[in-house]
Amino acid sequence: KNYAKFVPGFDKNTLQSFFGRVNYSISDKYFLTATLRADGSSKFGENNRYGVFPAFAFKWRAMQEESVQKLLGNVLSDLSVRANYGVLGSQDNLGSYAALNLQQTFDPGTGSQTRFIQQGNPDLRWERTSTSNIGLDFTIFNGILSGTFDVYEKLTKDMLFQYSVSPALVPGGRIWANGGSISTKPRRSVGGT
Image 1: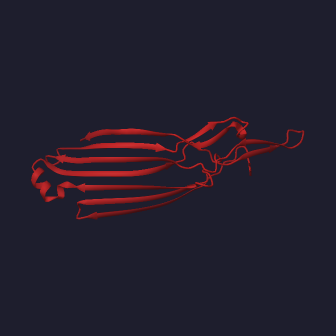
Image 2: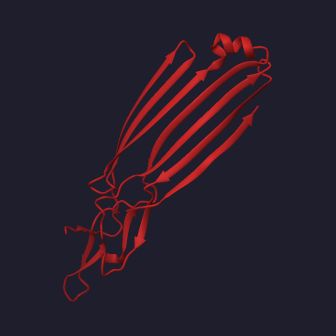
Image 3: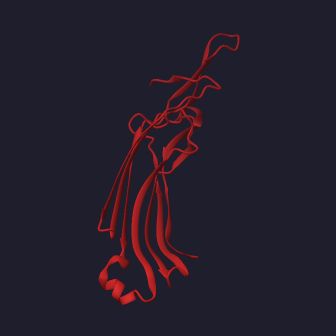
């Protein structure tokens, strides 16, 4: 295997990002936003440097509909329903060289010696967190009271961990890998002013 030379105190990484967004509305009633982000980081394995993270949002201003205005217009001055879904990537707590094989060569006075520091992982990839949300926004009595109701769920997968492994199997006894997931079950949120 090819091992990179480890130099204590030296740290360098790069991040490259691309971002695009499209907003679309119809008759000031229906709104759609689509976003696509691609991030590339030198911290990840050569097989997974880039991650693609989409997001979508939709909003319906129900009070702009004539039928809703007739039915609820005496009480509500605004009513909107919205939904969104998005994915974010994370490289938090990941060192610049976590995916690389590392070795250090030094001379303690008895001749040059090489020490293997870390086994790399070329398949190390972005940790991904997806969030889904459905919400309702309302205003009553010409702005006297407004509020929101939200139900959301969050899921993180491909979590980044440094695992301890027998040094007989992996130089240095540790390796970074993706594993595990955690979910926030649907939650309700209520707010108002």
